[in-house]
Length: 82
Image 1 (cartoon, rainbow, N blue to C red):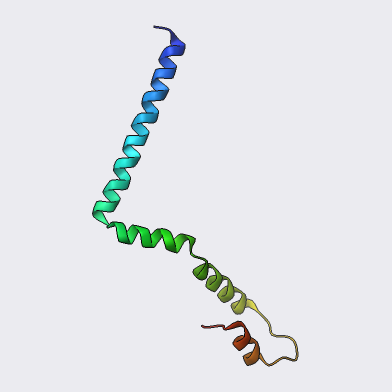
Image 2 (tube, rainbow, N blue to C red):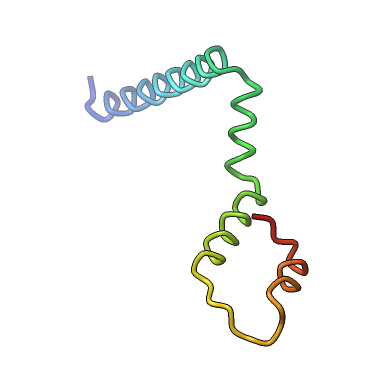
């Protein structure tokens, strides 16, 4: 058998096997954990609110207040919640 043909066939078979294994892995996650929980985890990864809250928290921890505006008014303006 031609070595090029063998390489192509092995590549196609390995791609198919990888796809089948990944599909099985995804399905097992749905069965074990549940689809709703997996969907929630995916939304949390891409949700903007937790990212913004984390960034605000990091800035607030290292921020040194300078200026004439009262700190409380700035927090109310930003709707900052700790």
